[in-house]
Amino acid sequence: MRTREERLSNRQLFISCIVPCYNEELCIKQFIQALTECLSTLTDYFEIILVDDGSSDHTSLFIQNLRGQYESGQVKALILSRRFGKEAALSAGLSVTKGEVTILIDADFQHPLALVPKFLERWQQGYDMVYGIQNDSDNQSWLRRQLGHLFYHLMRTMTQVPIPAHAGDFRLLDQCVVKALNLCGERGRFMKGLYAWVGFSHIGIPYTPKLRLEGKSKWRFSQLAELALTGLTAFSSVPLRVWGFIGFFISFLALMYGIYIIVATLLYGVDVPGFATIITAVMFLGGIQLLSIGILGEYISRIFDEVKQRPRYIVKQKLGFDIERTESALDSSLNGE
Image (cartoon, rainbow, N blue to C red):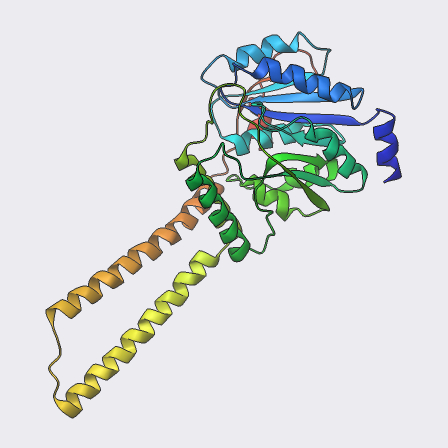
C-alpha cells in the first residue's frame, strides 16, 4: 500500500484508459481533450487506448487525426474490422494495456471524469478494483429501470457470483485484475460477471450518469435483452435445473391423477371425461416441453459458439503500439488475444 501511495503522490503511476467507441465522431475530440487534461493532473505517465468497434461514421478517421495532436504514445488506437460489441471492444483494449492501473470509461461523457481521482484514492487504500454504481437516473425510462432491477435480482438469486447491482463498465482495475481477466478464454463474454468472478478486493462509488454530450444511446432493447441472457446463461445453470424439477413435479401430478382415475373407475364406475381434458393436458405439456427445449437450446447454442473457437474480435488497424505506424494485427487477434 505504501508503494501505491508513493507512486501516486510522485506522479509516477502509469495509468491506462480504455475507451470503446461506436459512432462517436461528434464528441470524441472533446472527450479525449478532457480526459487528457484530467490524467495530466494526476500523473506524468498515461496512455489512452481508443477501440473503434466498427463505427459506421467517421470515428476511425477522427481517431487517426487525433493521435497527431498529442505526445507520442499518449493516444493509441485499435480499429476493429467490424462491430463485435462493447464486450469484445473492452476485451481488445485489456489485451494490450500496459498500465499499473487501467480505467474503463465511455466516450459520451456520461461517466464523470471527476470520479477518476476518487477511484485512484480507493486504489491507493489497497483496493484492486473500484467501480462506479449508477444511481437511478431520469435519463432512463421507468421500464428500463425496472427491468434493470429485475435483472440484478435474478443474478443475485440464480448465480453464486456476487455481481454488484448497477455496477457498469466504468471502473478502475489493478494490473493483477487485468491479467486475471485476460486469462478468461470464453468467446461469449459478459464483462460485468467476469469482473465479479475474478474476485480481488473491490469497492463501489455511487454516481449519477450525466447526459450524453452528443447523439443518443447505441444500445437497443434487443441488444440489452441479449446481453442479459448471456449473463444468465454464462453464470447460472439454474434455468436447466428448474425445468428438471418442473418436469418431475408435472410427472408426479400426472401419475397421481392417473391412479385417482383408475381407482374411481373401479370403485364407483365413474365415466372418464374425454376430449376436453385430453386436449388441455396435451397442449399444456406440449407448451412446457417446447419452453424447456428452448432453454436447453440457449445453452447448446452458446456451447456451439465456444467450440468453434473463433476469435472474439479482429483488429483491422493497430495505431501507436510499439512501432509508430499503422499495421495489420490480424495474426495476433486470430490467435485469440
